[in-house]
Image 1 (cartoon, one colour):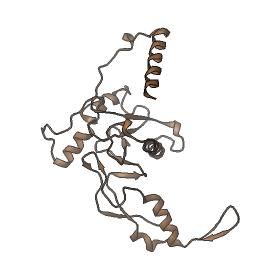
Image 2 (cartoon, rainbow, N blue to C red):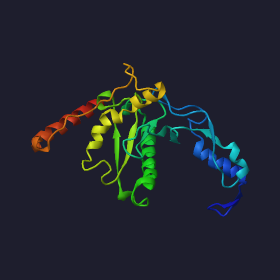
Image 3 (spheres, one colour):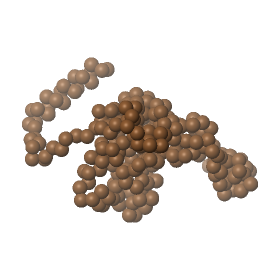
Image 4 (cartoon, rainbow, N blue to C red):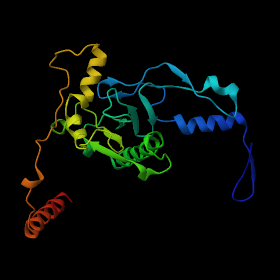
Length: 243
């Protein structure tokens, strides 16, 4: 295959080299060749799956990688399908390192994680939105349950990416948040049941949590400008202390 550079120089790439290069771009991450864990749970297996190469079919048998629930890996992150999705397309994006909290991530890991979230959103839009070419034809709920009090049931930071379309959870869109905090959204509990092949009554089984009591809009009173200014001033002072 001939490629012409910006400066007019011709470069010849063999089909074998081209396939190797494409494979490297797709699979040369820290996760390749080893298992990926989501908290204590195994989310890959070590069975090889062949990946087709359009340019050199004979090379297909040599392009393999372990995969199971994981469908995307990057230098610092991975994305996996959910064992019990709340709606079709509900997936999780996680750092490869088993950080528990968002504040544990380095700047590089933070940028990589949310780049993976964006890439996954674009992929899910193609699959689930009314117009796959229009990212505005649907919506997303992107949520982080940052700690057990917020409903985190696996001690490994994860971002919920949930494609949303009209009436996907009925007349009350807020019902999704109640389901996320209940047993339906208990990611850790579902993985526990998978590994133990039963829904056991065991103290070690992760419990659902993070639900917030309903608050009627009528009970919420708007604060004064002075109240908000005092709060903003307080936060500025705390930020200065952190520097």
